[in-house]
Image (cartoon, rainbow, N blue to C red; front, side):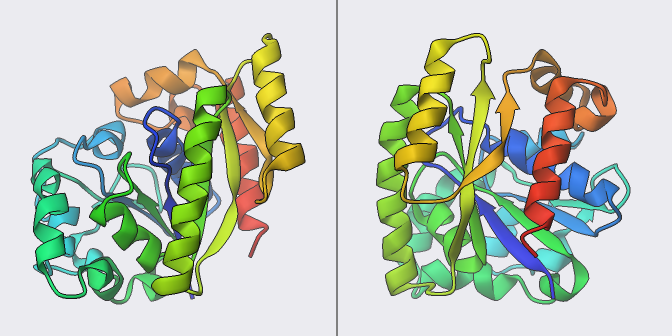
Amino acid sequence: MGIVYAIANQKGGVGKTTTTVNMGAEVAREGRQTLVVDLDAQCNATVALGLDRDQTPSSYDCLTGEVSVAEAARPAGPDNLWIVPANADLAGASVELPRVDDFELRLREGLGPVRERFAYTLLDCPPSLGPVTVNALVAADRVIVPVQAEYLALEGLVQFLDTLKLVQRELNPELTMAGVLITMHDERTRLSHDVERELREHLPAPVFKTVIPRSIRVAEAPSYGVPVDQHDPASAGSKAYAAFAQEVTQLG
């Protein structure tokens, strides 16, 4: 039975999509069937894996019940890696979904045979705590929260953890926190080290051992439509995501 992960944080620019794409590519490279579901109207995960922004069926169609997640999945390039693309229609989902009874369950109901087909399903969430992110948290088994190594990112994290507790209590009691992933860590700065220390010492949630460094190669890879392990496998960012993927798979 496969595992569904939501990669979520209401703050933008913390590495959600980068983590989803590169973790997915690393897990797939190990021979596991892996699915990325792009739930962000910006379509960044879709573009990062070499697809256009106008693909159909899309994750929007999964949320509206037109197709199942498994039916919308298509090969994403690297062996064993698949994607349900996003398109611009997702921008209206935050308005449309609340008009539907039990809208929080739409994505979970649309998963269908995904758990039998894919070892890992990664839900790339938009930078908000709106209806689409709630759908992802209700559909997921576990959540990974990328956090940039800056103090402002810590403030949003507390709010997100409160929302997570609400979802666990009211909608998905089986949801667990896999951990917080520190991203864009600059080894040269005192700030990055201070933020990492604060998270590890005081956060009431697990923090992954792996730290993702700030990396030009990681930032470049989406412009080529490939994960960083294909763009520059020897880079520090590629090695960090390989270590992170191994840490996640060891969770079982």
